[in-house]
Length: 160
Image 1 (tube, rainbow, N blue to C red):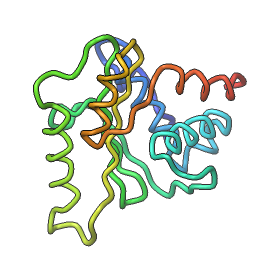
Image 2 (image 1 turned 180 degrees about the vertical axis):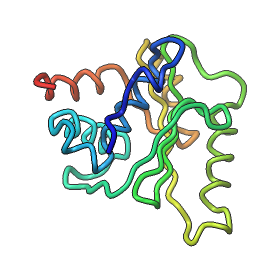
Image 3 (image 1 turned 120 degrees about the vertical axis):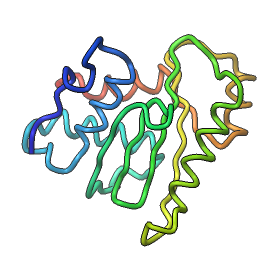
Image 4 (image 1 turned 45 degrees about the vertical axis):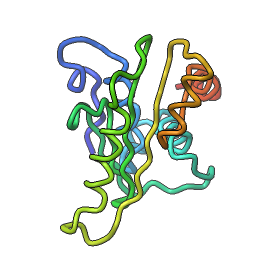
């Protein structure tokens, strides 16, 4: 399996979306042989995003950017769709979170799939966000991940 290359994902400039996509791609099962430490960091990143148990197994993973305006997406284990709305300093505008969730839910329920997929929606914010705004985001069925969550994860993997 080819190693994920950040410069193929971020073709114009490095961005937070590109980094998140790159990190997700490192959690694909075949990446363990390319770099076991980076693979494990990425696997724990996926576990954090999905709120799964530490022994959660990833059997397949594909990820990308800008699917119907969704910042980052990943198909995991052929049964889970993860969508990430990634914000640095901006906040939600309009009904974008509802729109993205509804569009992704339709994708998960599409009759062409042989089963219904689980949808996980994440609002990832590395800038500051008011607690009341985060509470509103959670009401829209998005889990929130902040800068402190990412720092905690990456501090456990300083050898990567």
